[in-house]
Image (cartoon, rainbow, N blue to C red; front, side, top):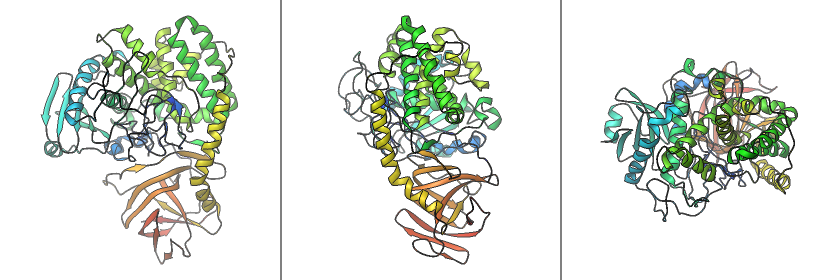
Length: 552
């Protein structure tokens, strides 16, 4: 077994209510983390969910490594779990009060139609994308094409307007309607293809009576992913990915979960948030953020090393996506005061609890750190491209740490959340871990699909690191695993992932002698409710002291 490079997400998106896993409202107001291949799920690791209030992150499915991103991003939108309108992973949600077209304003929303999405996204693109280059070097989206489809209708949107097209025309040009979102090419220009037939999001009004509705939420995710595809470079080939994002890193969280690192990261975010919201308190708030950052790094150095690459990747994309939302929503367009008010009131909600996955914290921390760094006039954007510093590292560098008290009850709340999350996660992970450690079981190693085979949709509700278990444990993993000899379908099954002899495998413990997974000659057949299929196998290398069989 060799060390494996973490599978960073190629996608980050909650499109109109898409959530994976348990999907409960986030106490960080993360509003919609979905795609882990689509990976947004501030709520998704447990029924309890994250408690950050950012107004629009997403769910959690598979990811790819930076080096592999160029060959897999075209199908990144194929990974997702089913959506529910009542579990939108946001601290702002649960009632339908957003307008259907631009997502801002007053009135009760009906579910957006395809025409609503086209009209709203046309307005948002025209307002924000021509000026996106002011947000981050290289983020000039003035020529970017947005291909919108619901599987029946299609339109191409640019800063100049809308050009009707069709699904047939998209297919003729080699652009499939994605499960969610994917990079594409259109008329010789970079494009982002989005599927709007994915449900809806409900949002309550913010403090100023503004709303973040489904269309504006989708625009946020599109811009977030466009930044990842074409600025961070994941759709441009391995050599075009930022140097900082080629480093080692992992999204996984240690299981059993611990409350202290979740408290420290919540406090980092809260202090950065206040440093942006109230500039007159900034020195004290930055000193407090530096205190919690130093304490987190000192007490949990391994987590800090693992998550740094995600803090850069997700954090900078979140900064650009949310800033573009503010550009699109502010009245008048381009008004910096209005943009700041929108960010402050709509998109930066306090953390009133913890998350159950460290990577979910990367989004809001990156957003808040970037906004504060802008206010301070720091040259932070070039620095994060090259690494290894994160937006947080740069904004607290040189600041003398000074402790501030935690909000009343926050530690107790996070303690209770973590205890509940561990109980719920244990129901899924503990049987899988026990099967892995059982000396009677063997391991089935399933390689990536054959060359040229599009990746199948994949969803999961958490990634975890477990003592004495190599690699990563995927919770509630769902995917059709296709190899030359057949297809193995996993449904909400906890599985393992690791790199063996340079190959990234999905790993499933099984009893080769009988039960629901008998081995007969060179074939193994699975007939359980969460795992079905019949594959040819060959003997593989020993892994963690266990016999393995490699699917052919």
